[in-house]
Image (cartoon, rainbow, N blue to C red; front, side):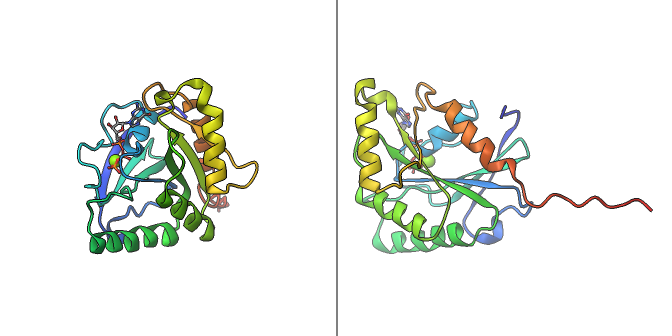
Length: 206
Ligand code: GTP
Ligand code: MG
């Protein structure tokens, strides 16, 4: 897909603020600072539409970006930031859980993990929870530019094994810095948003 238009729509703090146009939604989940917003910016070739964090863990809203009037990226606040209080974390959890389980237009959850390290306990819990709830998941291993090419396959294998991914489920290697993995990711996204609900039935004239 060629991105002709990308627009920030809203920082939603509750379901009442979610868009009502029923366009498909692609959510980005992952721990704080992993590179979710950078990935969106790279996908749409914009430097700073999705705000990248100088203050990790501060974003507590679902940030909606509408692409080509065709679908939304939904930037989900990152988990696992140590300085967030337990109460805040619980509230965060309920808010995100509700969004992920109740949101009809949601078509895919991109779970973003850092390819440099084995998935954290939080990453594993998130992945298990997404699977348990039957959500369509795409695992994206980002920051590929930060490790030598010779380690890519080994690290991806560790990601697959640590998460216990079913054989055949893809891990897309990505870098917001170099643009690596862009074509593969767009292909997946194109396939995901192609289907936009039921075809409108032809209304016979007369
Ligand atoms: P929260 O909104 O706090 O959850 O963070 P986030 O997941 O949106 O991360 P963000 O995109 O703000 O990136 C965090 C830091 O990682 C920034 O300094 C980015 O420049 C850097 N970063 C993100 N992706 C990459 C990448 O692929 N390669 C490199 N080298 N740096 C990256
Ligand atoms: Mg962010």
